[in-house]
Amino acid sequence: MAEKVRHQLFLPKPLSDRLEALAAKPGASKSAILTDAVTAWLNRRGASELEDRFAIRLDRMTQAVGRVERDTHVTLETLALFIRFELSIQAPLAENDQAGRALAAKRFEAFVQQVGRQVAAGRRSLGCLPEQRP
Image (cartoon, rainbow, N blue to C red):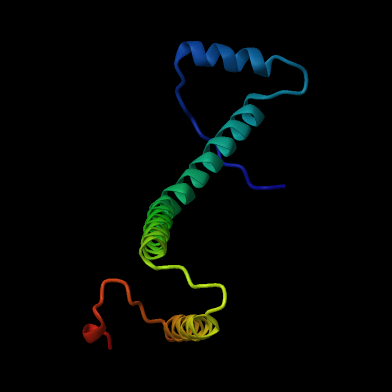
């Protein structure tokens, strides 16, 4: 059995009356009721302290995710507008222009490889002019 310590406390009359009414029920005691109440209060307090500790970090992470989402949206919108612009100014290839199609396929392959190299190296081109890139 756990060691018990005697405490003397003062309660407001309305709260004391409610405690008396609860303790009057069979199998209940003031000590058991107060032990349960204090334990529950301390447990909530501990949970609140954990929430307080992690709330700042979670807020920062939420803000970071929001920035990533915003940046991704800007990048996708930029790409979509660029593609639309390029497609509107480029003349379509003729059906039998095999040389033009071969050149386009070669340029596309070079583009995909360059994107792969940039991503693999962790470099970012956005905001850098070609002469400013490392």
